[in-house]
Image (cartoon, rainbow, N blue to C red; front, side, top):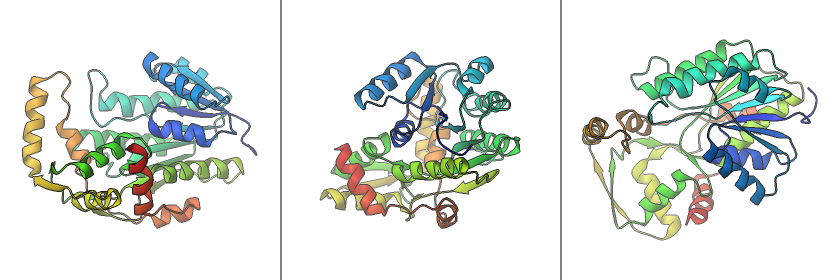
Length: 310
């Protein structure tokens, strides 16, 4: 492949990062794959609003091999964005991460796709006691063991204009008194635009014939700081003065256990709290050098995202 004339396949394309990637690939054909009719309608409406004529939206079951083979047909690069941090009904961690990955790899094996990028999360490890992080780690192993060249990109909290994480941070920075579990845990938020630039950098180097095989890179924002400090930095951007009270994580886990026992769809789970509680503190520069990108300063990220989310 020596150009970007062939489509880029994006699975889980209806999320905030999927939409930002589609928008950034405005000059490149995109095949956007989603699982539900609701996601299809949402993505099609968003595409129409932004007048993005290069996008083909496909609705299919990620566990249907024939459907995934058809979705990948004619594409040159794949970006796998499917992932969850909370199980809902039959959509378990094993289904969303391990089984979906297996079907995708089988579908891509005989396709024209030259490389796939899997977006994972910091803390993923196949031997993790946390079922979400463990299933993510197993999916990483599946990709890295496959014959298809793969870039596994582990990332932390992502802040983007109008996304869920930015709105949640905005709420915490605005309230007079807020509560959280173990707010001393470390966050290393990255700007959504930097994640998109990293993915496109790999698409471009693949298109140019620079075939780097089976890499696992950890990419995060330029600063690691406590959750309390992050809220304070956000409040400084907004000119507010919130007070936060940090509660023991054990209390949150006990509450999550109770909700799991009493609700078919609890708003929070123990696995979800474990993912959110992970301490993120890595050196992002090796990944930045490898992909030739520069990180957006944290204060700039907060200014862009909080104002856009307000």
